[in-house]
Image (tube, rainbow, N blue to C red; front, side, top):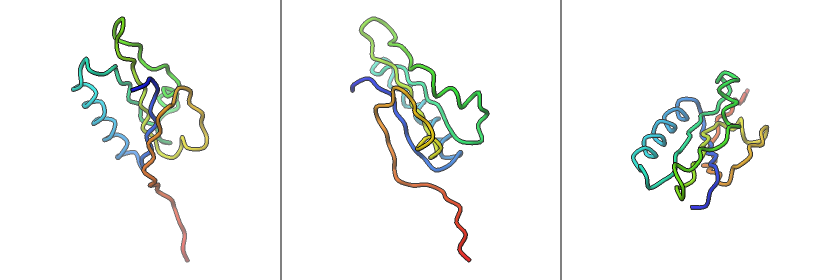
Length: 104
């Protein structure tokens, strides 16, 4: 695939953490057939220092002619309207969100 980072939208902290674990495991299992994956969770209760990781550069290729690394951000809809993240080429949005609703 062409180089570029990935932004994946999910609905909550638990779902995001589980997705990050699975993506990291799959990327590791791919070994040398894929570039390094930097998987970053993003949700509102993360400390600001950890939230800032989304602005880091994607990993460099492991060697000359190697596959480019990818930054994979797994986020709630916090990143949907309030942030601009350079390098995002692929966006995966399943269309689900959690919303608080009051219906008297």
